[in-house]
Image (cartoon, rainbow, N blue to C red; front, side, top):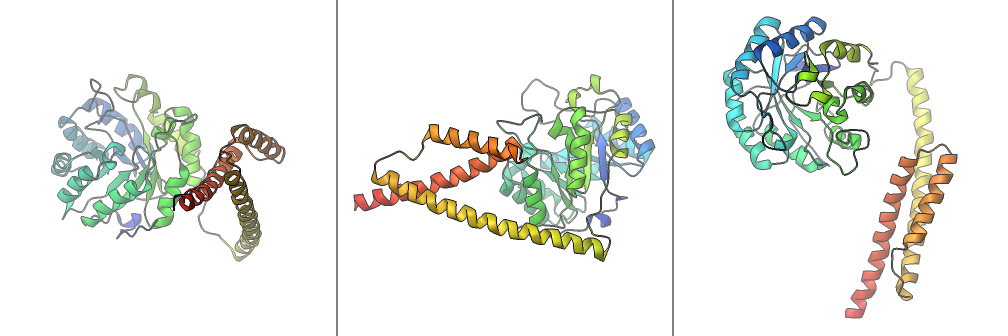
Length: 369
């Protein structure tokens, strides 16, 4: 995927940036006392962090708390006055943007439910023309990299150069232990397409529970993401929205202080030489692997021709089950995890079926002529 954005580096955003850039605060603003108390505790630990709170909350179901509304913007103004923290909130339409600008909100983000709608993103982009304010774009609810990239492009085309992405995970039929499937490869591909793009990880929404946040936050740092957005509440159990995934300011401090921040660059010629040597081995093994896969696919095509000529269906469910069970067993003995093996063989099997289907269709086309 190609993604060309005109971006201002994070260090030029008028934020006190040190990795990780920390954005913390409650899911929703509920009262002036609640957000100021939370902000003061966060500021005591991390005076250079950014305070977040949802003012308008787009909820999946009606009749749930959908945000305190405009009055919360005055509370955010007071947070900034009393703590000195920059403030951030989510916007879903042009009216939200205009109200945030009027009340001095420092940073905006576009939520996952808005990112999926190009009309809504364009409406926000249009009202941002001529404005100099940082804007983050969360990934869409479902794993669609083009939608995510398109939203970033729309905002950037409006003249916003202080732009970044927030990786908050994706809805999937099987999220495993997470609230939202991380699909790390999606964030990696986005970063690869535009290396200068700041990417912030949201372990609160991915994990859905405080117990998973430290693991997810550390993995995000190990993947060289630029920061973290962690939902932090003075009393999570009493939160009006997403109570199960929020942490206290003290818990936030423990999570951040326990992070290992590793360098993305190699410190010496000796280390670089060793790394290059190991990468050379990987490169050779990758080439060997590609050659084996090419040979396997050639045999799959021959099998497809045999099935076509003998009027046999492409899918042989019993054989496929036997193959996957045997491969997982052999792979486990070699130290390869089961989920990795299953995912790998599903990809190989899908490509094999595609090739055999092509063989079948060529036969059908000849017959029809």
